[in-house]
Image (tube, rainbow, N blue to C red; front, side, top):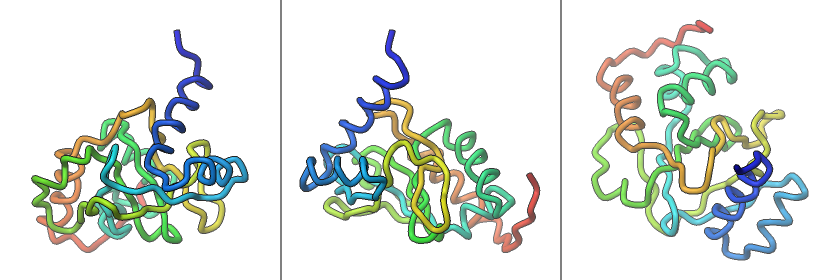
Length: 165
């Protein structure tokens, strides 16, 4: 049996493989700072504008959006960054080869993304945080679920965002 602490440590180590300097990235997280991880080795990311995510969720309320993402993306990991204007759904590195969804873009290999400590699951001010935490090493979002969420907004042309909870 694996404990939650062991699983969290395994996730941290798995992510840190994508850092240019593992030691620096590790210490940044221990200090509560973000670090930058490179797409392409273990994962890549789909950059999702907040307006697309908010329209899909039907709200701008952070906790409600986070809960929506956890359900819509089957628990796949999602980071909120750039002052909460951008979401990053972590997907397999092969996802970019077949990505055809409008309204979001798969980041190219070698692109750096801001990644908060895995333990930061709530936003404080404009800090980056995990809207949906990574459950275990390698447990990524399914690209088809991310694309379906984006397409549901883009194809509807619905510009409104209610504040349902």
